[in-house]
Length: 124
Image (tube, rainbow, N blue to C red; front, top):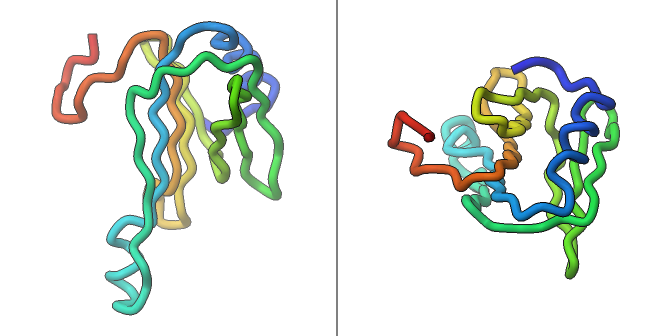
């Protein structure tokens, strides 16, 4: 992954607009929080292979990281805190944000084909 270049990521977001696509979205502080403070709450959200068709998407700067929003017919999907991206060999847009220690905090991925199960090595 490499640091987000807003105009480049915006172009990729635009390429998926008005198509049936699959998203993977997760946020987590994982078990990280409770390892350092036993009173801390472990929070997270996870959705995989939600099929959506967004009208338009937008990436905006938010004080050192970015928020990506996808406008659906009946609402929005958004991820805040992303800082890195890549387009993989299958043409999927992968966006992620990490904490200071490099641990994943948020991920938003967009694909024209469903994502396979995490345990599967071959995504084709």
